[in-house]
Length: 441
Ligand SMILES: Cc1cc2nc3c(=O)[nH]c(=O)nc-3n(C[C@H](O)[C@H](O)[C@H](O)COP(=O)(O)OP(=O)(O)OC[C@H]3O[C@@H](n4cnc5c(N)ncnc54)[C@H](O)[C@@H]3O)c2cc1C
Image (cartoon, rainbow, N blue to C red; front, side):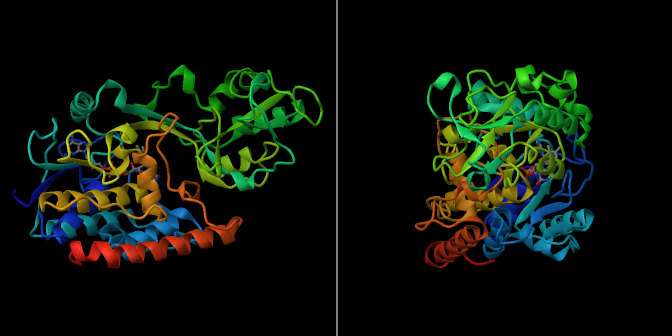
């Protein structure tokens, strides 16, 4: 078999995958439709474009995305190196000069003799060869139609309404109460609001600063997933009759039905994180922290994922992909980046790194690899490739996805212990497993 792979998409995941493959001695044909065709959010002809913020978020190991970055550095990530080299001052965050970042990535790949960059749109999944699909959340419509044929109507999503997720340990259990509606079980945590608390919350929601809609996002809401602030604008009691309806829930402290309730539902099997049911929002992240902390019981909430709404093409990875990011029914096809159902620049890059390694291993006749479950990358991969009982929702990396520690710790101490364990396991994986099979770059 020829040691060559095709990569569709020269964004964050595609560029990382291309670099990893080239380091493994595999030739890469990297297809990027820009500048002939731009998605509604891309504007630069360069590869590796950051479409929105120039921040890759926290660099601290006490934060799961900071840990993921450190893992990527240790795994020889091309994009993390470019980010570190084009960094701009941003406190604890790793923010970059986006032009310099993209220019460095483009120049690095253009100069690589193993990589051929072809500026063309791929309109159908290539019928032969080993292929990495890394066409991103704004995959061109022609390719999306071809993906739909491959995956099936119900396994490709075009739109994303994400509710925030909070760390279970940061919820005040002295205020919230456990109950399902009409006494049918105890599955939810319920944050009760008095009329005064509700009124203040609604006023702040309406006044809060939001991420503006882009043209292509306007008018695409389903009534079933309107952002909470838009519901609040429709009428003061709309939320109290919608996702905040209190019917069937009695606060055990008062024996009465609260004026409104925010329900929290288990997000993970371990019960370490909870999502705010029906709380998709376009509030800016800082505003989400400020306003959602007005909800009784969430005064000290620690956010593991923020709410959002945007067009997002992603496949139903838990049924379609293996841990090696390989399509189960057609193993020559790999997926990388946001299209796998991860959310965020760093997460997309991480999936690019793994897909690049595994597609290269595939053409070399080697089995795919997956990082240990206790690493940030491993827990993210398992989140997207493990079938669960709930609807599949794209996810930022967060400590709630990690397997529990043997001892019970809290807060920063727990995060530190999770990070130490992750890096230990990653080092073991690199030296004991990966390095022998992937020559160092
Ligand atoms: C509007 C918007 C804003 C976002 N803001 C942020 C943010 O601020 N922070 C954050 O962490 N994450 C953000 N994300 C989420 C996500 O992290 C980024 O979209 C990230 O760039 C995804 O990386 P990727 O490599 O999967 O896709 P991309 O970086 O989008 O790369 C995909 C590439 O494939 C190309 N392509 C698409 N179709 C074809 C085709 N058929 N043939 C050839 N080439 C093709 C595209 O031109 C593009 O260059 C945002 C997403 C969107 C949609």
